[in-house]
Length: 115
Length: 115
Image (cartoon, rainbow over the protein chains, first blue to last red):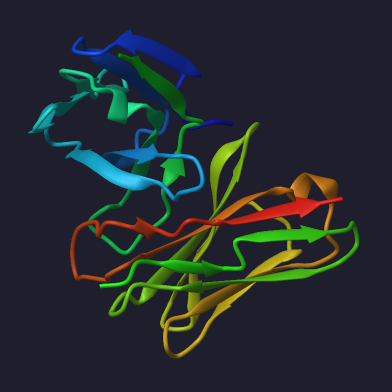
């Protein structure tokens, strides 16, 4: 049973426009959420995170929104740049205040930003 | 500071063989986690080690095992390889603090192909 779902395998946007990547989760115990970016032949790199006590976190061009009641989070990239083209993974963790280091990942969304 | 390193980067094995993959964490990081990435299942958690002890384990068969050494370096072993074990195996390391989530830093992965 997949606990973190990214229902869009791919997304294509024009440079300068907004990219919105979505993620849904089913486990109510998740209390910390992260987005990772992955280029081919490299490991995932951390992008941005949000705690379940917040509904928004912003870092430069990247903003993550969390809707706990809907068990939904989204990553907004504004403006999108060609260098943002990569696979984006949504991940979640439960008991983030303890020593639980198990990340549960979605299957990823391939973002292509066209010049 | 050097990142997480994984060796070898590429590996080809045949069914029934066994394989050992190695991971050197970032200096000072004492937690090491392993993940399997496949096109169909995405990134799945294998196990996590801290102070030479396995703290967390994912839903993988006993053919998948690991260990951690006193210098925090870790190895994972897969015995009796199956075609379905072909995947990118990622290692991630993190600091261990008293509270809160500590970011996991990923290595570039080992691409295992089972023929």
